[in-house]
Image (cartoon, rainbow, N blue to C red; front, side, top):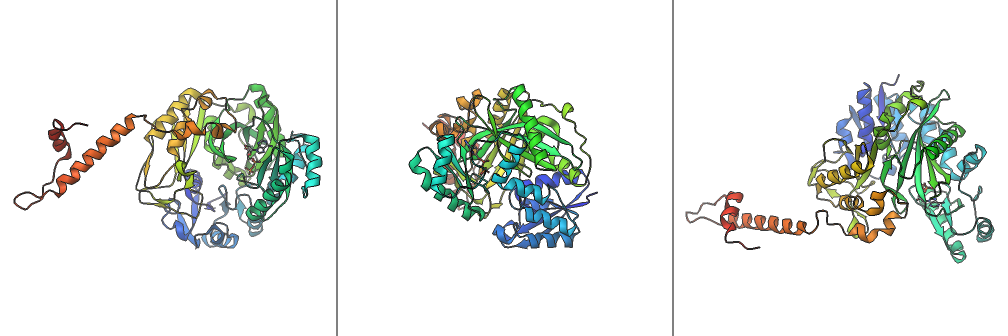
Length: 503
Ligand code: ADP
């Protein structure tokens, strides 16, 4: 039985994992870099160890340092969270070699699914539909033209080692092929150290729908239904919801069965996600498998009623899955918004800095997975995710209204955030109607950027607030005749002056 878990991560996901550990009576060990000395995950853990300088290559990606802390702290397991070392086969293998339980699949499953070309081959063998395209890397233009001749334009040139939307190019015209291959290869080389690329047919009107799976070490595999992740910017998810508005019972059953088949084909154990691309006519194709906990896992937890981290831990310590497919149900509707420290008005530029004030939304059906507190400095070194706001309600309509209410109540100052942009999405007709695809953000940019959350009344409120502030300052510096300073009661003073004031 696992007694102590080292969480090889930071921020909200580290705390998320530690919370489940605490409920299971398991001790948690945090690791932290220079930039994270005052981070909340360090305070939350039972023990915390410094592992190096701020750049992740010297801390959160440094296998030796993390293994060393695991040994020194007596941790018997490591949870990698998402990102960093979570899909690093060498790390999983190293843990196994050290006799430390890696809370995730084994290195072989990670590497076979991490290489997208290899994963495509496996899925074809297992009878899972994949996007039409190549099953070998493409090196030159001539080869690419032959493939495109067969599958037709438009196509996607994609990095085999890809992730986070990097190393991907869409090609609409034959003349763009050579440049797209060159561009995708060099981006892939820089980002992943591997320049292998392949070609996929571009699926028109694409919906990104993924299935959560759980598999134990005894051959039991189940799925926990879908997540709709088509609200994307530059191929990166912004909002996720479950159930998917596109889904029918028939499609759900078919895709669910294929998701289970995909996990079996990967010899998988742990929690994983099978991503599919789906067109308007409900044709669906395997895109990739993520061999870790996803950022958006809380919406599944809420609707299915399962703690995925606890399931991961139980599977890792060899327990038999107690959940049975036929007992699982989707209850109500959940939506997640990713709150980033970024400035939507400046092309979503990251906005690191000191958080001056933060008040998180509360109330019925609201979950807030965050780590930021007042006075905390969001570091420049890592992903600028502040938190994930998750709401649940019995209907989609009510969940949207609840998310609007929660986003409105969410106040952060000191750094710019994506909150106003997300609030605007809740008002967008296509989103509200549930008939959107991955082009939603780019097609609605003008509407989404026109975001005065409380309409014109905002300006009036701002004017009044500025006036009160101005008056207070005037009073504060006005000396009295006897030389003392006058400390005004701003409300009384404002009330007295009101008759004389015209706005
Ligand atoms: P990554 O691993 O970099 O996240 P994915 O293969 O998961 O890359 O694709 C990310 C997103 O890119 C998808 O959710 C989808 O919006 C878009 N995409 C990828 N492949 C295709 C395709 N063949 N047709 C249309 N859109 C695609």
